[in-house]
Length: 307
Image (cartoon, rainbow, N blue to C red; front, side, top):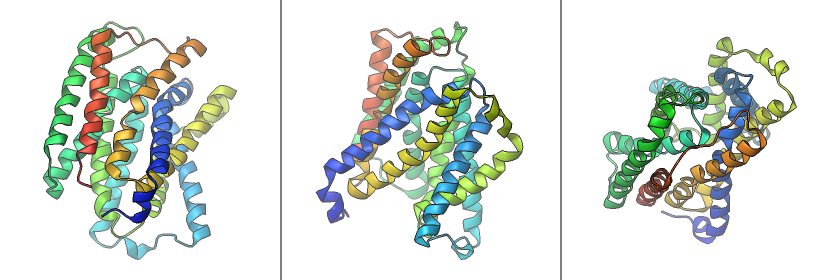
């Protein structure tokens, strides 16, 4: 059931959803800049710890820190599973950027919500309606059109490698698994409490495999990029969470599906500013049509969810 707040603030919800889409859309460009010096594990560790510290201070100020009793019995296993899933998602997503153009990764990541919908159908007996089915079909058709041209280009490219596709698919799969694991946990803790614990434990899992001293080897641009990536983790998810409070989740998800559009724009700007790091994505009208159909399919599938 919609709340009065959700019914009366669609404009605010649209604004927050657009902020999320823009931030998530341009994030791969800044991650790519960080990868010039820092590895994906270390980048993720910095993002987790930064976000974890800020959320901890916020919970402490509001006196809403989670308690041990919130995770009893099987909930600990679900929590650990969700943490591992999100860690793999973050690391794989960044790792994929080592081998692929940012725009390609964002288009391919649109399979994540589709996987989440399938998981909801099989695990939680959610209804897969006609609009979602149409959206899923368009998503698949769009991906086929997009990669019909991109895959041969990637195979013959000196800047890209098809192994990046593997990492992004893994990132999408583990993100959907994370979302399915966290769903029952949110009945016992708030979203902020859960993310705080995931950031804390996830960062600790990554720490032995990270190289924090690489921070000292970064130039000013790379440091600013890392700071942006850390802030993006907080601001984008904060805007996303708030958007869900004031607008329908299906509409929020549909707007966020436009993130690849902002990645295409950001990548074009980055090519002009940093031509030694970014390369143009080689697409004809078929490839661009495929990308547009992927976004449309993702939007339709999101709007088809039960309100």
